[in-house]
Image (tube, rainbow, N blue to C red):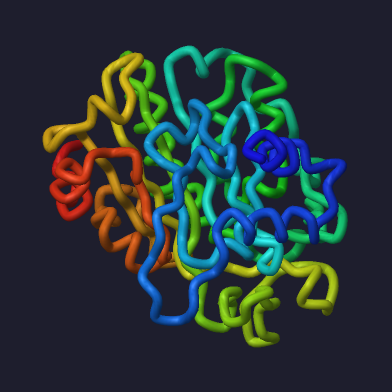
Length: 306
């Protein structure tokens, strides 16, 4: 069963959408409203790899999590918003080289199963929003194929230019510099959407309402990309080769949440928050593979470094 789930989710070119959702719900059925959150063991859905070593983010409603594990990163894709819920990746010095940007345009993700709209580069044209990377191009410059993978549209969200080219890019540079110094970084990034873009109101999921802000060339909400209110990132910094077992109360953990509007300043430090705050806004349980004692301390404490 475990192998079958992994094959369906990881090699979804041959899987139909109904099969993917049926498998996800069988592994962990959606809870009724008000029920406590369940932490599902990550290995049961075949998502554990180097990019998700700190734990696969999971919430109480798996029907809007379409998992796309890749060598370069792991995506939880929201087929109703046509945007990623989150992307997870590990960044090391070995991932950094001199490849540079291998693409000028973004491409649909062939890993998406049939029945899911494949966002096109042109869906962002004239929208006033950048195509905002979650896993950055600059984090995958050691190999041309790895860099090209960052230009799949399942790895981007509509992002204001002031954010994308401001504090978001500033933090990307910080992560790259930290990795070059010999640290391993485990990174999660995603968005927070307005209530009009909610996708967890019915057992089978639902498309955002017509009031959900979106970009796209079509008037059909099913072929448009929902715009997040903000974009967030959580970064765990550990010694080279270390994993979740090394995380303790002194481990550097950066959490930021940046409003997706024109108010952004250039310095990412002004958007520092806590992991607890991001969990409360998104409904996802983060860093599940870190010990409970370390989580309790780290998730409640804002980053104080530079």
